[in-house]
Amino acid sequence: MNHVLAPAASASLIRSEVAGLPRYDPGAGADEVAALSGVRSVIKLSNNESPFGVSPAVAEAVRRGLADGVSRYPDPTGKRLIEAIGKALDVSGERVVLGNGSENILELLCRAVLDPGDLVVTQAPGFSLHEIFPRVMGARVEKVPVTVEFGFDATAWREALAAGPKLVFLANPCNPTGAMLGAGQLRRVVADIPESSLLVLDEAYGEFARPNPEYPDGLETLRELDRPWIVLRTFSKAYGLAGFRVGYGVASDAALIQALDRVRTPYNVNKPAQDAAVAALGDHTHLADTVRRTGLEIARVTDRLRAAGLRVVPSSTNFLFIDTGCRSDRVAQELHRAGIIVKAWREPGYENYIRASLSTPEENDVFVRRLAEICAKGIS
Image (tube, rainbow, N blue to C red; front, side, top):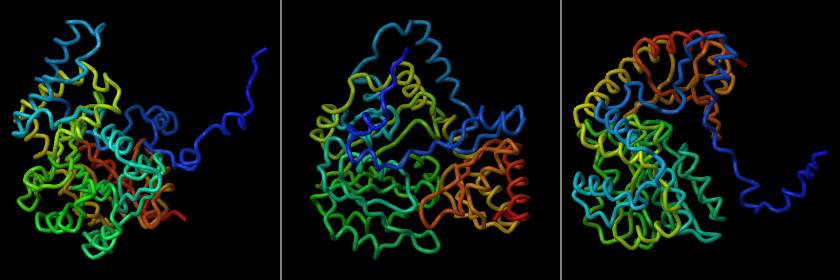
C-alpha cells in the first residue's frame, strides 16, 4: 500500500512568503482548448509568440548543433553568444549575463540583491514576475499605476521613488499594455531614481518599438551613467525563439554580473539555445521583416477592433491590451469555445481587459470577428 502524507505536513514546511504568492498564469493550453472547442487548429494568442517562425540561419544552426550531438553539457559561460552580443552592442563581455529567458535574470537579480523587507517599485498593470520574484525574497512591492489613458504618470513615479527602493523594475514597452515611454519620459524617471537603487530596464519587446523615432534605446540612455543599472532583452519575442528560452542582460559594471553568476545554475542556457541565438543575432533581415509585418498587423487589427466599438491601448509591441467591457475571464472562456486562446487579465482594476498577441492576418481576422460577436452579445 502506498503511504500518502497528509498535505498539512508538507504545507507546514513552506516559507510564508511562498505560501501567499499568486501563481504565474501562462494561459490555457492548446490541447485543453482543442478538446473544449472541437477545433482542430487552435489560434493561440496568449503568450506573445512570433507567428513568423525563426530565421533560416537559426534552423540551420540548430540542425548542425543537433548533428554534433547533445550528450555533452553546454558551455557554462556562453562565451560565443556573449561575444556576439558584446560585439553587436559595443559592450564588454564581462558586463553581459545570459539567462533561461530574460525572466530567469529577473529571478537572479532578486536572489542576489534583495533582503526581506526591501522595497521594490514597478508598474501597474505590469508583468507578474516583477512582483512575484521580489515577494519570494520577502521584499515589499509598490506598483505605480498608469494614467487613465494608460500614459506614464511622472508624478506618481517620483513619489514612489522618493521612498528609496532597492530595486526598480521598469518595462519599456510595457507588458501588458504595449505602451512605451518616450526618450524624455525615460530620462525623467531615471533622474528621479535614487543612485542607491538598482534600475532594471526590461526591454523584452524593444525590437518592435525601435522603428518609432520616439522610442529610446535604453542601453544608450544609461550607458554613461555612474549608477547601477541593467538592461534586459530576450530572443523569445521578435527573434521567435520562445521555445529555446534564452535572454540576456547588459549591466553597468562587471561586479553586478559576477554576483548574478554566483546565484545562477551553471548550465542555465542549453547548447541549441546558444547556437540559435548566435544565428538569430546575425540575421538582421529576418528580424526587420518580422518587426515590419508585426507593425502592419498591430495597426490593422487595432483599427478593426476600434471600429467594432472596443477600446484598445496603442501598442508598440506584438500584442494588444483590449477593454472588452465584460469580465475578461468570461470573455476568454467564450473565445476558448471558439478555439482561440487569449490572456484574461486579473490584476485589480483591469479585470475587463484581455491581452492578445497577434498571429497571421487570417487568424487575426477570425479573432477580431469572434471577439466582436462576444462583446456585442455581452457577458454578465
